[in-house]
Picture (cartoon, rainbow, N blue to C red):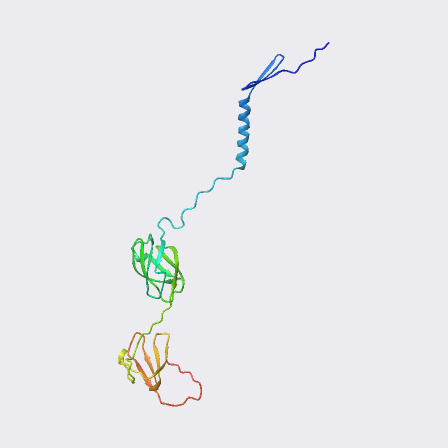
Amino acid sequence: MTKARHPAPIFMHSWYLIITQKNYMRPCSVCTLMICLVLMMEACNKGTNPPPNPPPPPPPHGSNAPTISGISPDSGARNVQVTITGTNYGTDTSKIKVSFNGVAAILKSASATQIVTLVPAKAGKGPVIVTVDGQSVQGPIFNYLTSVWVTTIAGNGQSGFADGSGSAATFYSPRGITVDSSGNVYVADYSNNAIKKIPAGGGAVVGAKGALGHIRDAVMVSIG
């Protein structure tokens, strides 16, 4: 008769799994199995981890680029003095440019941390921009205030008909005024029936009288 074979006994050990069979013994390390599992998990993780972040780009203008921390005042009319504070301005005003809403301003002084400038005429509302050696920075918004002023360019408040420079000239009820492309001013001296020319730059006033009459048709007079 053939003897039935019994399954080989299995013994569990804290570190080894030993399987015994007739004339055969094979050890298998539990630690080896664990190491294999860890290596498999690391291989899987390498395929799912995102790539490292790229390094940040360098500053666009380098470390010496100008900065603006504030302007004072932040509103005003033409020729108002404005102080701009910040860094990296330097003292060479030939390398510094300041604009108000795109209109170039006049510099009065400059240091490493401060620029003093004058508001240009007709600047309007817009940002203050500082450019130092080709590197620009935009600052706060400046609010331009329109101003109106009256300047006497000829006459002395007395009525008359006299040519001359400045206060030496007299008018009698001037009613109209215009300016040509060269800056010469023309005044319609109503009661003197004259048109007077005030040369650009403040030269002597020259007038020419006409005869009193009546105008039936609309006419255009050109003075060259």
